Length: 538
Image (cartoon, rainbow, N blue to C red; front, side):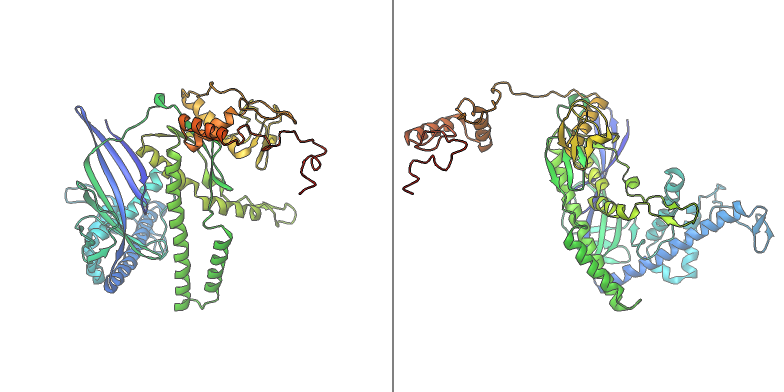
């Protein structure tokens, strides 16, 4: 039996994790693939070579993409012509047969895939452009496979068509073999030994599979992909074993509202007042610099570093939140939100008579879109899912329909139940915070949808609290519930509480709440300032 699971692990930087489990007779083993990210410390010559490699690889990527587009155009669009401009009739001798420029047939007589055609043409590329010879061969091959993955995602996963890359969208390359790590140095073929910050050592038993070098705003980073085939499987909680569930409602005022009436703050790293002001100042400085000048490039670099620090803070905070949430219960229920649709632009409205565009609410929705993007709900749910799998717990996704409009008491659904952040049921009169009400509905939906057997624990050894009248003095019997809760929070044992009670009685201090020291009379509601016996002597 084999299965595959991809999640993200915690740490200083994002780490991807993959399990491929296989059963051998009675022992269940797991192939664990991890990715550790480190910051490089290259010297001047190495950093210049990395920048030069990225520029050349970007040009090769764009040329290969244009080649595959032109090949498709010549094979399927031009009809009987090889080229519409020259109107040359298509023949096997003059026109392309494969999905890319080059020989489409292998030595065994089989037809090559477009990526294999372009890989076999790399030696000709190095002869025509000798400066490509300084790049490692596996780096060039992985660059073409990167383009092929884009095509596969477009045709198989219904994603966007591959786009041409510029300096801001192409900033990495990958090694397939030849990488070594020794202490705080890593050997990269044709780059040499490069120093790096060894913040987390690679565990014993793991082997290096591939290495990706990335250029970011504050320097260069390396992502090392390691593999171990002898790792035991992680524990997994079954639905029948779940006893407690916590419902989560994503918000903007607070980052998360939990069904246990607790909430997690939203720092708003990119949309708080200070950050918005600093970012506005840095963007204004860029706009006042001359285009294509060194001063403008330096100002852009300062803005990029500022935004990179915001992303690091948000990522670190989300890992802390995910860890705190997973420890709450056996299962976590979240909404299956379409976040991309929530931040989508409003459809334009056009006047039928004048043809001019009317107001469609996009200017008011722009601030909401920024808050949702800053909260990064999708990234947070990914981290919660990983932490749940690592802890042997389950994340349950439910349909978000009517979670904020349904009453958790009478289950009456009405859009008028919610008014801003307040929830008032128009059927039964139930009053609650709208976000906490939504988290309770999410929890109830998960219980009903997955058929969970949740046991509600209720304490029956405490008497019910009594509502006091205006002139009634509370007695120890009436305040027993409150005193037990306070002692439970303080952690005092029953023996210590009895000892403190006797000490208070011996010292003559009040024991019954509500008494006024040595004066044992009751205040009057309408004559409070004249009731003190020593008022004239004060």
